[in-house]
Amino acid sequence: MKKLLNTLYITSSDRYLSLDGENVVISSEGETVGRVPLHNLESIVTMGYSGASPALMGKCGEMGIDLCFMTKNGRFLCRTSGEISGNILLRRQQFRIADSEELSLSIAKNIISGKIFNSKWAIERVTRDHPMRIDCERFKEKSLLLSQCIKKCRGCTSKDQLRGVEGEAAAVYFSVFDDMILQQKDDFIFSARNRRPPTDNVNAMLSFSYALATNMCASALNAVGLDPYAGFMHTDRPGRKSLALDLVEELRALMCDRFVLMLINKKMISKKDFEYRENGSVMMNDNARKVFITAWQNRKGEVITHPFLEEKVEWGMVPYVQALLLARFIRGDLDDYPMFLWK
Image (cartoon, rainbow, N blue to C red; front, side):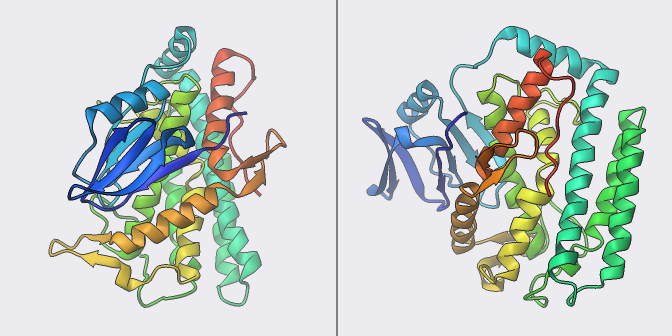
């Protein structure tokens, strides 16, 4: 099993990254403010605009360390990576499946079924843990509707039909998302999912978490030899990591949504941690990103028992394990793709 290494996150916009021997050097206005050995890293994510030196980019490519550039609010810009791993036969089979409506639909149904199942579990977890603080009957009704959506999902005969069921399930799930916010109710209000740009505190955090999780999935797919751009549910589009977006779907409710709710409900982030723009957009400030990423890294190190493998793995390894299972299915080692179903 691959070892979980660290991800270096650069959250300040004035930081420049360069190479010194086997170390990445972080500088601000010509002064060194940090130095990290590269052998401890599996990826570097920078949210600044000062950039990185060609020497560092080349070294990261040589060592297989992903270097990802993002905006301050977490929107993906680009990433550099080294030589593509994996054998050509695996990728050829991936492309054949992606080009087949029937074969790709089979995988897509598993992915969306997993997404809905985990959304249902997130609702049931709140019902179990906080029965006195929510409308339990309403939550149980939504859980039942999601169970029905899973059944509909399994019976879909086209991707358009599957997308319709996915949209129906998302509407049910997000209809009680605001009720799962138990603290700071005046400052964190969720009415609907919005993005590009997010227009409230909750959506700003959700978008940020989705961007981090998608980057993790893209790195995991590269690591097992799959092409993160050739998806089965999301259609091909230049520059879009469609397979990474597929893989993150079943993990959203667990890895992202519950994490954002935890930060709010434990009051780790407050209203003062956001910037409000004239165009109505909202983004996290430097302090919020630091708190968010510190907690995110701690979360990645928590150990769970994988529901399919029945082995202990860190949360941060789940995207890699799912990518590995997907590769095994594509190679023909598994009869079906085992989606991540958490309880």
